[in-house]
Length: 232
Length: 117
Image (cartoon, rainbow over all chains, first blue to last red; front, top):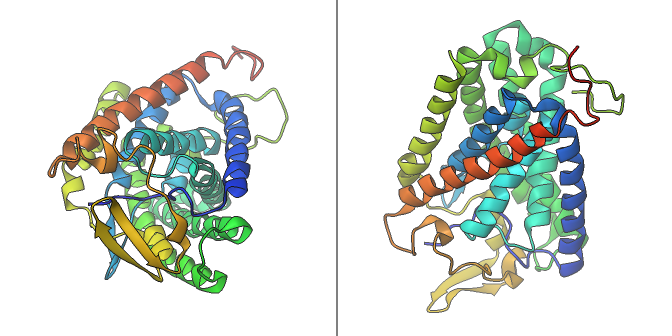
């Protein structure tokens, strides 16, 4: 059986793959720098386990249409639980482990995969969750709703990021309109699954340890002395 | 709930999902895969999959590490080893991520924020 969950090599041309490889390196450098403020002896082990959890759940493809399945991307999930900077590192680590150990996701496609899922997915999910934070803090139903919506949006955003990459340097012959329609259509359906998994997971963590849910913490978990736009 | 108990529980859930629930995963291509193959016909050959037609993946290459011991979420390509591959993946991931985040948390004091309040 051939198992591929992420972009393989050769979907975009070499310059595009290289360009997004540089985007990934730059972005991960910034994320690692910013993530330090959100990591302490309590949140660092949590971040490690959230990463392993995303790896595990990404293995579970669920059916969406005859002949097509979907799986968790995890952007909103990690952003809500550990914050966007740590979260983008979580997703990037999952993608690197999958590419190197499981031959899932091409090596030259790592830059595009990291851009789509670790950056676009995580930060879009976080933006939605952040905008809905008053609701998320009001009640359990509010938190679940926020998680669901943020996850649905992060899935479609990551799919759109792929369409952008294909527009820039697609190596195949498929037409852009068709690619756009299919990617968005399928990922709205996948996003519903992503939303259900994200809401269930965030709900379970919040029930056991609400202090470990980044989104629910007071305005900032630490005193920030540097004022550069890290504002969560 | 105590931190250690919560974290161990979280890890066990991940292990059960990767080690057991993974056998019930849909074998159909995921959303991206089905879109990249849309328009092509896939033929299984001795050398792997051959694509004919016009689609996104028409120039896609075989993974450079396709011959690796855990490639395609199986141990040495053997059927029925998805769960074991998943358990190994969870353990490797938690080790790698744990190391990365522990190392980053150790460097936190340097210029990111003032120590005690």
